[in-house]
Length: 266
Image (cartoon, rainbow, N blue to C red; front, top):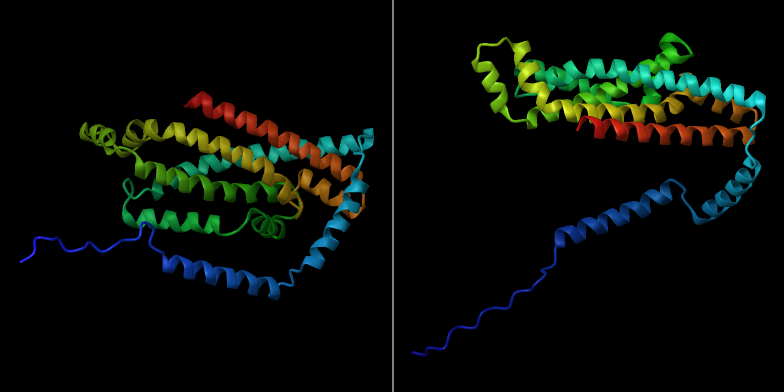
C-alpha cells in the first residue's frame, strides 16, 4: 500500500458568485428597459444641456436691487421662523413618541402603535404633506410649519426609539430597583444615556427643516419658497439666482450652527 498522500483538489481563491452576477445582469437589463420606457435618450439629454445653458445665462448677474432685497428678506425671515417653530414642536412631540416606540421600554401594544404612527409620518415627502395641509388650512406659513412638524416627528421619533433600544439596561434597572416610578426611571435611567444623541438628532433636524422650508413654500407653505415660485412665474431669473444664493447661504449657516450644537452637547 502506497504512502503517497492523495492529491488535494485545487480550490479557487475567488470562486465566482453566480447569484450576484445574475442579479447584476438582471438589474442592468431592467435599467435598459426602464430607460426605453421613460423615453430617456441621449438626444434629449444634449438638448436639455443646451436649454439649461441658456437658462443659466439669463440668471446672471443676480439682482440685488433694493426692492427685491426687501422681498428676499421677508421670505428668508419667514422661512427661518417656519424652520425654528417646526423643529421646536417636532422635537417636543418626537421625544414621547420615540420613547413609546422603544420595545424595551414600552409594552408591545403601545410600542407597535407608536411605530405605526412613525411609519405614517415617514411615508410621505414633506412637499406632499404640505399640499395636504394647504388644502386643509389654506396658503401660508401654518401649512409649512405643520408639514415640517410631521416630517420632524417621522425622523426624530424613529432615531430616538432606536437609541433607547440600543442603550444599556443596567442604569435603568438600577433606578427601577429603588422603587422609583416610571417617569423617574425615564428621567434618571433613560434620558442621560440618549440625551447626547437626541441633541445631535435635533440639530440635524433643524438643518433639514431650513432646507425643506424652501420646498414647502413652493406649494403654498409660505417662506422663501413662495417668493422663489413667484419669481419663476414672472420669468425674473436674475432674482431667482439671488434667492438661490440666499438659500445656500442660510443652509450653510444652519450647518455650522448644528455642528456647533452637536459638539457642545457631546
